[in-house]
Image 1 (tube, rainbow, N blue to C red):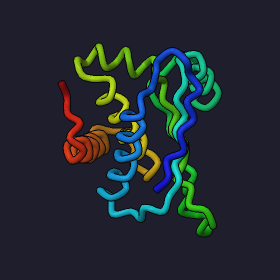
Image 2 (image 1 turned 90 degrees about the vertical axis):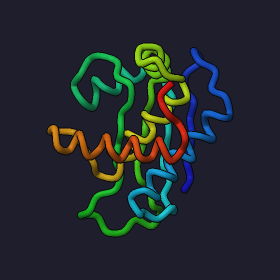
Image 3 (image 1 turned 135 degrees about the vertical axis):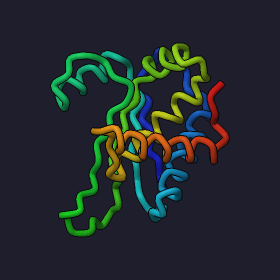
Image 4 (image 1 turned 135 degrees about the horizontal axis):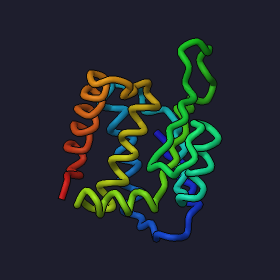
Length: 151
């Protein structure tokens, strides 16, 4: 599993520990679902301004959000030569705000957003109460396995 990180924001210094943990989170998300590890995932770290523009362009919502997921896999497509699972875009500014709001660490918030997005890339969604509950249970299982807990 290769996590290709593009840090396009300058507001928050991203320590190597964070990147290492996010890569572990992506790998563990795949392992939890029994997926092969031979996928590539792109992770872009951006500011609120950039994610707001992306949110407006792709979701018609003119406001910043915490994370966007862009799956590349499609069951109808033939097997791709390169197994690219998709793109994750995280607003680092939002992650800082939410970590403070929820009373846990920046590392925990970034890891949660990565795991959350990985499940989106693997086809999960939270459009109703049942699917939301299923996705949350999977996310918490991965976070627990990684030892990235609240607090």
